[in-house]
Length: 201
Image 1: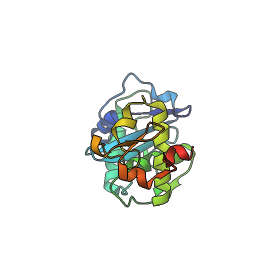
Image 2: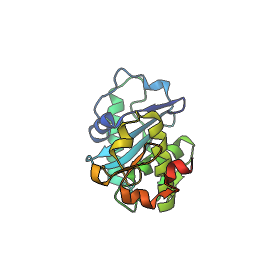
Image 3: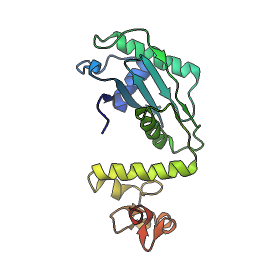
Image 4: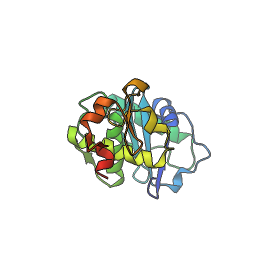
């Protein structure tokens, strides 16, 4: 759940805004909000995030691998194109904002990083530094958050709770808490026959 004053644009529509400036969400009144947050799924294999401060007319685009100036400018131009089709928020005068963060050092933590950037943005911070330990902890934290609001059978039975890789029947073990793991992942992340996720909670 986002705090009051924040609006979430889903990744399906954010792609239309960020890449082409299409006039989506015409029926939604954005002037009721102070901020917009939106995950952006680039080329269907990498997560970035768009954070907009409506009152300050500021657009922040964060790529965990670090976005180029040209990419940020394209996002800004397409955001202004999107705004030009509306009557509920200003149509020009937008500028790029800055959010400092560490550079992604692997090929699989982009989703966790944008969630942490969103958290920092909501908290009013303008930076987020991370390392392997921070991301490993954040991954478990967000996993538990998602599990609490998801149907029990969806994520728990399909993907390994440690590495997020799909499971198969031959290499699958279930914990007391109903989470599922690869046998090797469970062996490295368990205490007293319980996964470290439920053991520590």
